[in-house]
Length: 304
Ligand code: 13P
Ligand code: SF4
Image (cartoon, rainbow, N blue to C red):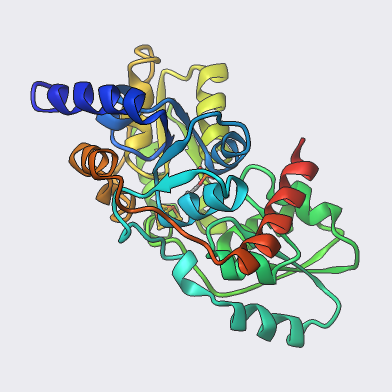
């Protein structure tokens, strides 16, 4: 903290000077999450917040698709990305051509794209979803067949929750969540029989099947707050447990540490530089942004 403190103080000072807010995803490191963030949350909460913030500047502490979503929803604001290289394996797995390919393969089927996609992909889709509302959105689509892109594991997990739909998917995966195996979960349970296991639905279905609960990062936090298990394993990005351990001293967090290399590109130094220099502004072609906004706003309307 001694190293972080001067950065935290300088960032918080600059935020006031620039009339800026910091929107931070739950996977940010604790120095960002606790030290400088104004709003923390899952992808859905951050997208909704981007429609409401009053500031002139949003600093997006998360990955690039999150900053694009904020810009799409608040085009009049400056949205800064502290490191443009903070991508996402899911967002990189599909393009607008991939959406056209799926539409040709399943004519007439609605396309539900995860928010972990580029603005072009959102624009080419009928609606977006996050891990918090995916089953609700897919269930609300017309027609028997629903195309879900790009996360095949999220699609397979959602398919079980909406058995009246035929869910088909693209072959994208999250490089963090695909690393967990059912055997990892069984091993930890055998070592700690009272352990509660909570998984993110980007994990493969055989991993989710071994868990006590699956949900978005906000859903995971809510579950831990409500159930207050003596021991918990969060089958998701490693910073989550660190970020909430202060608020839950009664919970012993166990498990392997899988980090997202993209999320970890965001550091206090880079946040300070982006606010100081006002560089790293995210731009979205207005024609694409209009169609992408329709997909995101449709999702937000259906989620409330
Ligand atoms: P959440 O919407 O659950 O926060 O997930 C975002 C993400 O990138 C998880 O890997
Ligand atoms: Fe993308 Fe996975 Fe990282 Fe989330 S954890 S940003 S889905 S690579």
